[in-house]
Image (tube, rainbow, N blue to C red; front, side, top):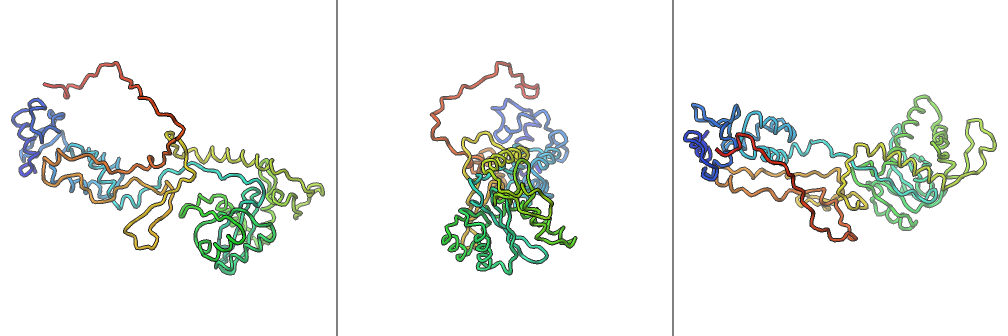
Length: 409
């Protein structure tokens, strides 16, 4: 392993003939000078550091491939590498190899979730609504929810074409009025020209959530989950689904009126025995908004408990959304919209840091400079900040005592 490698020959020369001062050591052997007391050669002229093999330059790619055969993470790969092998910059080479592994990047775990960003609370009921589809007993349904009152409208659909959905939406608006804003995903039929023209003619602002990120429209997603779960249980017991839907609308929340009362200003009559005075119209919008603010504070406390918060941010962007372009795609529109949780620091290309056969190229290799940093993209400079003065460097007054093996002989 050492006879055909110039770097190993220089190291072997100093092992057999002694190590001079570092500045007098051969250039290729200088990276090994700090551990010279641990280096020795076997009868087969294989250089070892303790019980670890010192790998020549030309074999390092193959060793890295063997270390990453099970596609473990960076930490696991470095632990295994340090257990069996040694060469200068071993940890750096392992990190680079793992970061360029396409299989590992494809199947690695998701990024840490973002902090919860609450939507602005509307000033009145049915000002801002959200809608989504779900399937119940083999039939598609449209669920629309008011952001302030949390009132839901459920309509069965004969089809999910744009014209059919528009007809159902018009029937809902004929009952409750036309909202100013509507939030939905960007899939069909909301991406059709017919739907776009409908929103324009009716004076509705359509807000599209981030693709493949259901939490961006979390309120309607939670409403779909709750309503579908209740209706599924009711269907199994043979109950009337509309009675269950009425019961959902008259369910009060803590410190808040029912969703029906918040929207209509009164409590609807149901099968529950009630006092006539409870059915009189009484509703305070500001009281509902204040209660919603308190609920958002509690939700943030639990949702952000394990969320990643970088304190270096000067100003949060309005939307944690990025546009990604991929030049080699065959699609007509190679630009996608993704959140920061979908982005990774990745250089998934063929590794090129480790030279093939030259020891000199190993010594003169330039450090990696093209690794992107997502956190830097999130930082937004504050225009009002004055120019910072030079920071004061704090120096420790303690003496530095090197271990014996690092001292000059």
